[in-house]
Length: 53
Image (tube, rainbow, N blue to C red; front, side):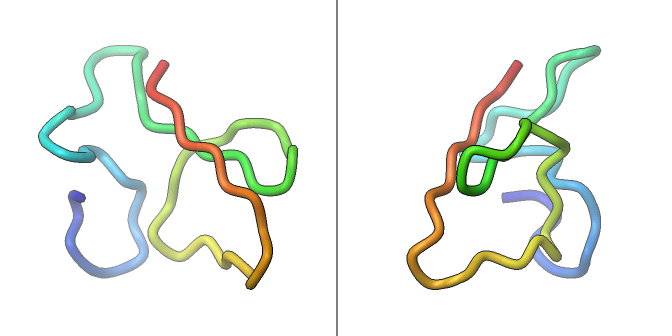
């Protein structure tokens, strides 16, 4: 995952980097997909969905 530390937006997962308008997005407990950030708080029992689009 890039960046490896800090609070920035995730730009690469398992070697698949953001490209143009396609970026990594996350949804927690059915919320709307939004930019995936390293400082996103995930609680115990939360459902997480990650997508690249």
